[in-house]
Image (tube, rainbow, N blue to C red; front, side):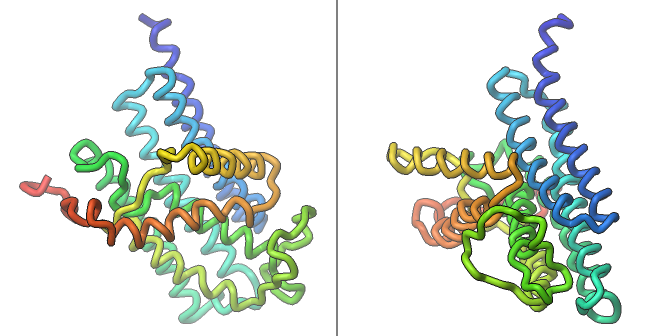
Amino acid sequence: MATSKLRYWAPQLATLAAMLCGFLSIVAATQLRFVEASWLILLSTFLDRADGLLARSLHATSEFGVQMDSFADFFDFGVAPAVLLFIALTETPGLPFASGQGYALALAASAFWIGAATFRLARFNVLTDVAPDQSLFNGIPTTLAAGLLVNWFLVCLKYAAPGNPLGAAAQFSEAHLFGPLQLGPGAWSVFPVAMLIGGALMVSNLRCKKFVLFKSKLGSATVVLLTLGAFVCLLLRVFPEFMVLLPSTWIAFWLVYGQLAPRYRALPSPPLFPVGDDE
């Protein structure tokens, strides 16, 4: 009996490793090491994917694993990104977020992000078994939302102009795939708004396709190769601008197509608050 349960350890260890990355990211953020903090959150997205693959391949899925993964997602993709962005925006001299309305906006956006991630995960846990189409998400998953937010933050750090107070271009030794692009301090004003929009997308009923293979072999091969390339970049901590392209394109496409295509538009939307008689 004990031997048969050993296979459950692999996905749980991956989940714990993801949580460790989230914790170390918060530590790095408090020490103003924003590039390292960002890479750690992105690594946790990879580990979050890995624990699901391990559970399915080892036939080690369990209700305990589901709950553990949900708690890890809350910490890694709710708390850690909010802490990173809040500290980076409010503790960097020269940005308009240290006090006053800017500080209030950064604080509100970070708090809203955590609340939205919590709401999203609780709602997903309740509705996952009753979804009419298991290949679709209703609302953007926390992993994808947090990964995009932090990945774009990392891209902005890499492409910050010399006078940008939150720049970290010197920490990226690889080539610049976006060419001579340079971002000024105004680029950081986008992030509180992005957190508010991202939080709203997490709790919405907008349909987004899960990452699945296409019927076309060429399309499937393209997605697999791009994904593998992104994982290699993640492990080597290079080319964040390459890593961000596939998920950004995917979500932009499905946020439009998933709402307009007749086959998806005809699907019923789950309740916003799945409680009581609405469950």
